[in-house]
Length: 114
Image 1 (tube, rainbow, N blue to C red):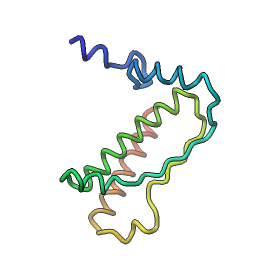
Image 2: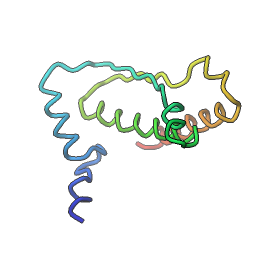
Image 3: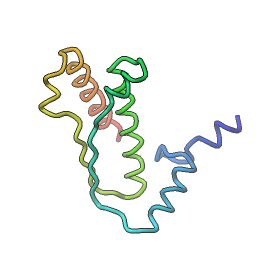
Image 4: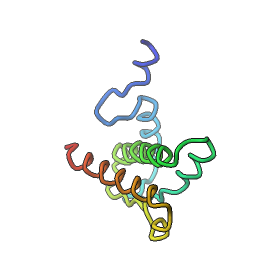
């Protein structure tokens, strides 16, 4: 369909056409070589929407993936992601376990991707 083709990526970057256009505009100025992200608020986001906490963490990871695609498109060479603090170990065992499983699964996917 027309909408699907307009929103689909035209290469393997995973970005949509309008995102690639935004990257071209952004890259006209100075760009950092290193950026860092703090993964915070996924649990609050989920709870505020009546979702399972694990689903909020999953959505947060998807947003990180999208952000990493932007970084790659903009040729940002180094990215640091703060995803889990010592304080997080005080959370319920099932939430900590879900976060560890998510991290393990996604890191393995990244390693096998290329």
